[in-house]
Length: 85
Ligand SMILES: [Zn+2]
Image (tube, rainbow, N blue to C red; front, side, top):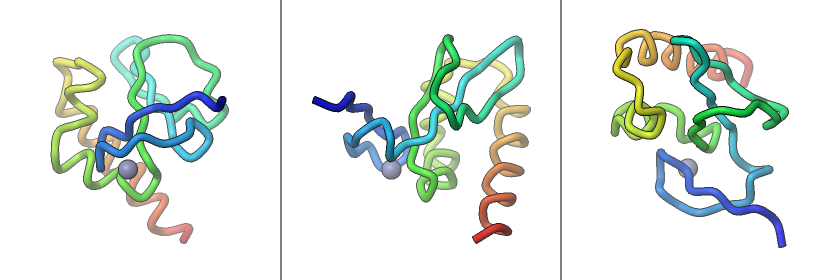
């Protein structure tokens, strides 16, 4: 059985390997592509990043009071991904 996680954007459950993990570390955020970092994380499909941002799902999942910096960071991530597609 593959590990299953819930995407904080679309709320669908999916295999971990289809999801990105975002980890909150020391007031900053890391896109954990290797899915190896410990710590409080949120799982999201790459295509759901903007959705997760709009729905505040990521902010909630990471439980971070510093949501403004999270939003800024995420918008940059989403923008970077859009640029490389
Ligand atoms: Zn999703």
